[in-house]
Image (cartoon, rainbow, N blue to C red; front, top):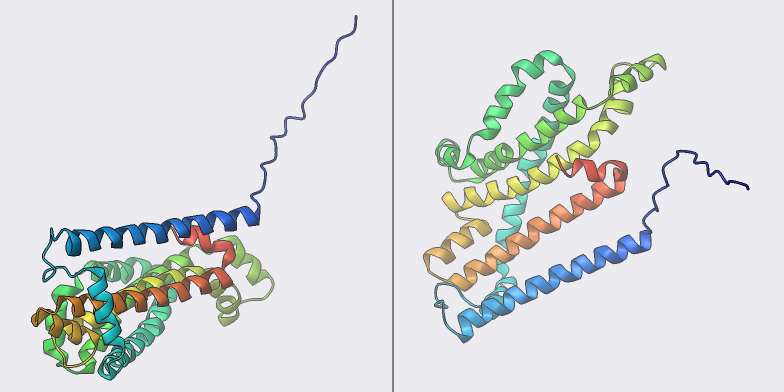
Length: 281
């Protein structure tokens, strides 16, 4: 009589790697589901307002009326002048926020004394509702471009700064020591070690900063000013042209989402190894 003894190496079974084609197909299905969801929502909206008239069209126009107003809006030369005005203020304020946010974020993340003295103040200012400060900023800087640029700067600088600081703090000490062993010190250490490790966090902060910057620009135009799409929205609302107002809102959503998509593609292109973890911060 013989017995058979089975031995096990104790190694866990290897997980099957997910096929790239399967992942792409799954992502496609999710996007198709999102498109279907939006179409169903618009169809129900059209039925509720235009067909059953459960909501008055003067209060909430149906999607077809908004689409018609959107078509008239994009053929108006004044609309593109207003959009260009808003984007110019947005670009200036955001550029200042990027420079200041990166410099201060790197400094607060690297120097421990700044982490205990300056960083808590920055977090406190970030938590301050900018909407409450907007009237004071407009009173202080006037109704011109300066007040809008200041609002854009204040709204966007803190996410960029604080995310950059968090990125510097996550750089492993072992990596810094290894770089110093190979002679990297000062600017070389920052350029070759700290900045590449911080870059994913910076891009996430920039995504948040861009979204908040656009809100700041529209807020400044809505509260005081005679230019920009925020002012156009204000005039349409005051004249009770709800279809035109919602058409302007659609343009705003498209513009800001286009910018966010570009930044997301840049993040996946330049920091693919860090994309998943950074997106959860």
